Amino acid sequence: MLSKREKMAMRLSVSNQKGGAGKTTTALNVAGALNELGSEVLLIDFDPQGHATEGLGFEDLYDDPEQDSLFEVLPDLDRMDDLEDLIVEHQEMDCVPSHVRMINAEDELSNVMRREERLDMLLDNVDDEYDFIIVDCPPNLGVLTDNAIVATGHVLIPAQAKSTSIRAIELLFQQLRSMEQAFGDIHEVGLVANEVGVDGEADEMMEWFKDVFDDKENCEVFEIRKRVALQRAWNNGVSIFEHEEDCDMEDVYLDIAYHLEEQIDG
Ligand SMILES: Nc1ncnc2c1ncn2[C@@H]1O[C@H](COP(=O)(O)OP(=O)(O)O)[C@@H](O)[C@H]1O
Ligand SMILES: [Mg+2]
Image 1: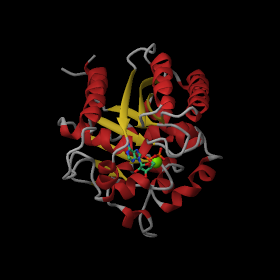
Image 2: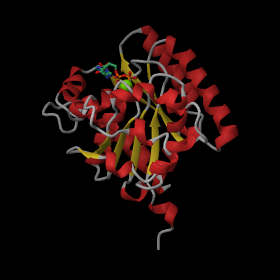
Image 3: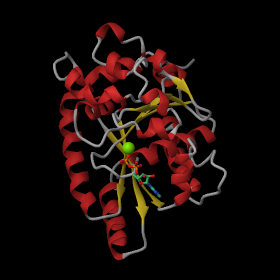
Image 4: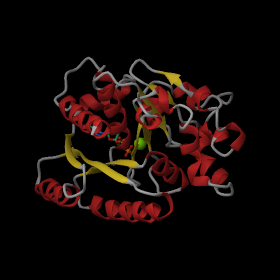
């Protein structure tokens, strides 16, 4: 018989405080790849800007004033059982959409008890219904990102193959190591070099990524090139796997999905 722990979802944050690093593209397409392999996936759009919500075709919910959202649930200890009510179904995955009110969520959380642990508490109630729970993080290192990291304990880091990514990653590592002091182990599961071009800077950055990430336990470097098909899939409200065009990056997203599955089995 499986123990409780073995039945629970693997939780993963897609995180980099730099905007435009490829978080949302990575989150949607890794979720699509895991679905393709037969897993049940929940995607949580934790970015107040709601790009993943829009990318799955739920933009109407994002600015519906009547829509209940994480903004109301996260700060309210009496509502820790209510995540289920926020889940909507997409053809490839379940989703907790963002909401325009989430722009005020960091302020709202600033004075509550155990403010970094709220998402963790919420996920405990849905965790046995999924194989993977993926959190698309906002582009800053605030209390929402802290919540995502504490709740998941696993981080997938997308970054452009540009020298400006180095500082962002070093800062993110600092944040992860300092959070480990308070909340326990946090594992970097991979680096997704995104929109990799064919130039000297990209080559040098791929070397740097491999130097830094390949030494970490169970951590791999993946390489996603710039492809308009990825943007067109997003515009059509699906991952690259449900999008009509073929795209050579599907194989890389599948590799990431296999890598994640191995960590569960392993
Ligand atoms: N590999 C790629 N090929 C083409 N366009 C991409 C690729 N990755 C990201 N983009 C585009 O770049 C922009 C920023 O990417 P996004 O995933 O939203 O980054 P983040 O979530 O980190 O801010 C989006 O418009 C997205 O469609
Ligand atoms: Mg994003």
